[in-house]
Image (cartoon, protein in one colour):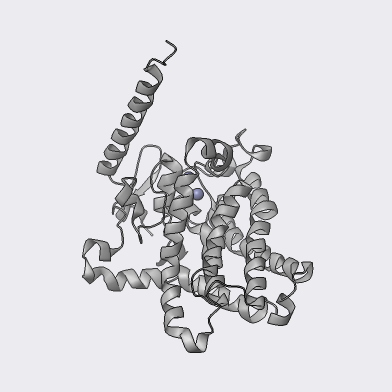
Length: 342
Ligand SMILES: [Zn+2]
Ligand SMILES: [Zn+2]
């Protein structure tokens, strides 16, 4: 595919889409865009997360009697499934698009490949190895632990309102399934903005931001406290009337779905003429500029409402720079203000 008909490449070889990012059409009153929006909302990513949640439910999640008792047996089994699943999905993108480079740099925001740029900020100077180890030895165990707590609670009937069964509550559960990405955007925006406060950024979130040019393994490369806050989203299903399948869908949307923001390519050429939208641009800009786009795609446009939204346009860039300048000025003024002792 010709990426030049969709975007521009600068002198350094970095590619950016022509079309600015858009918040969801219902916030802009563009009802005629709803059809395309819903299709994009469901296919392929959320459909994929629902499919894996159902596969887990059918073949991996143990029966209710087993889950009534916490045990290493089923916890480790679930961990193995998660580790294999993440390895297969993230690994496939890494293999085809970063190792084999089947698409070269077409639709790639940053023309560089992390493996060619060793850096001291990473374990063993390697972004890939550092990110991989943090994901598998810290991220996936914490994610699995949260799932184990939720499934054990389900088996024992622990829930603020009681777990709902599908037969009697399917209308609400379908609605809740559609609301999961909105829950995700609100939760992620809040915890993410929180860990961008100076102290928490320095000690916690800077680990994730070491990857300025993110690649698939960057997705779950975080400080353990960030993992807890991030996967803590799944605990909302304790206080929302919910069902374990919807909970697992939410869990997969954050576990497997963390990939999306870190794919590094705008489109993936699965075959010659069928590109898959990565939905990576908003979060790519976050990794590039740090203090923009704390949420996701603008489904619940908190970034827009709080003035952090960067849609990739020149105007958004100017606005961001003005905001950064004002912030610098404010800090400067604070530092030069005389203290009472003086
Ligand atoms: Zn990220
Ligand atoms: Zn961040």
